[in-house]
Length: 174
Image 1 (tube, helix red, strand yellow):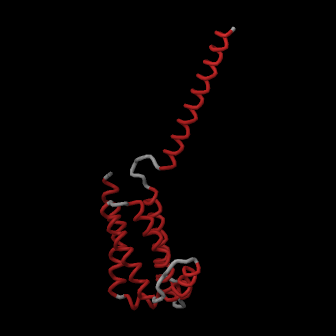
Image 2 (cartoon, rainbow, N blue to C red; image 1 turned 60 degrees about the vertical axis):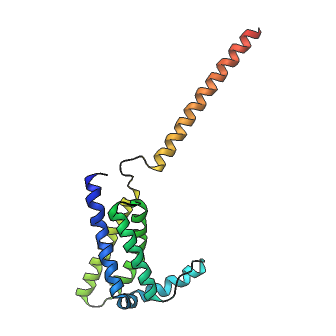
Image 3 (cartoon, rainbow, N blue to C red; image 1 turned 180 degrees about the vertical axis):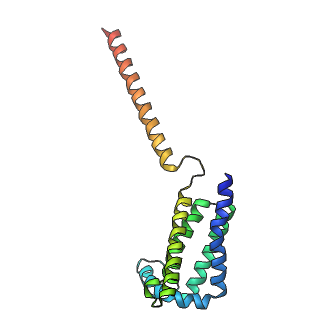
């Protein structure tokens, strides 16, 4: 692991660990903010066959637990791509619930909420990059293309050898 990954992953994870711990401590206040989102998401999830609790406070606690677990995994380099993807996914409801700047009338508060909304959007962008980071190793797509290229080359070589053997066999018969 490079030094930049060794330092950057814990730094990126820190916002989730601290934020989730705060959400757990103040789950009732977070649940109040989350209610507009949970009221829309839970019925959609249930229609899709995903069993979600209906209580916003329970959902806040689940989200916080997921963020702490994935944050710790990212910080320690355990399954960093998966943990970054999980954190990115968890940011969608967190941001939609916590920073609804379009609903704020006070100009100063609206500006603050807008700033936090776009900060979260930037963090999601960083997480998407981290989720795709192969740590300097070839990714699955590259390896798949490489295997296909090698297979095509081998097939051409075998076809060429088969044609040559067929010509030699035909020459021996005549």
